[in-house]
Length: 121
Figure 1 (spheres, helix red, strand yellow):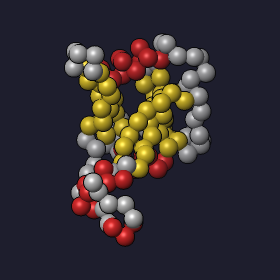
Figure 2 (cartoon, one colour):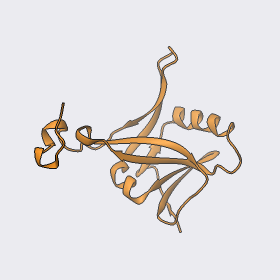
Figure 3 (spheres, helix red, strand yellow):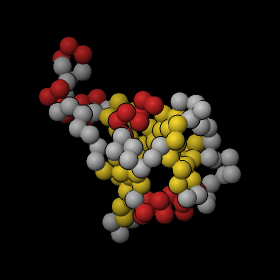
């Protein structure tokens, strides 16, 4: 059974909740939430994104909001504890969800080792 998340673990600002609610009015009824995910970003660390989902797994954490759910798997939640998701509209057609209070994950390119075959450019 999925775990219930509280706002100390993951929060959305009122503006982010409002925008997310608007988006959920436009999607298929099978969509049950928005999944927040993490992807490895090499030297730049971890990147976060969001996508609609029609599946909530047993190991997911779920934050219930008015009109939608935010779904996060256990691995991603470890990086998101205490994070606040906001919606920023700069008025020039440049609007996006942003993640505030992200924990620091290393020191950028200086943490990349040449032994991994990677490197930084």
